[in-house]
Image (cartoon, rainbow, N blue to C red; front, side, top):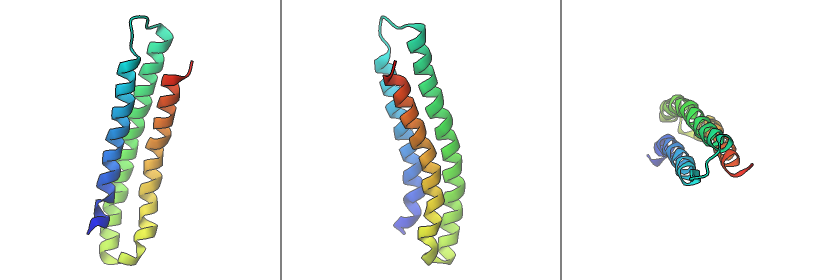
Length: 105
């Protein structure tokens, strides 16, 4: 029963990643904001948002397929969850990229 909630939990993790980048972006805005820093903040938000959107579509498609496949054959759960993990990896890479954009330069 709880195995079917993995896709929902991973989808909510995407929102947490976006929240982290968003809050760090807000705290990075100061009175001495330059064009370069503003562009980096915008790029970090755009990167995280686009990647979270793509990862969300991937998790949604893979999660529904995993739920129906494991309903028929519960023994393939470990193989079916790999596609969810790969879709989540896209958002983790975007989180790292967004943090690098915010904290370097």
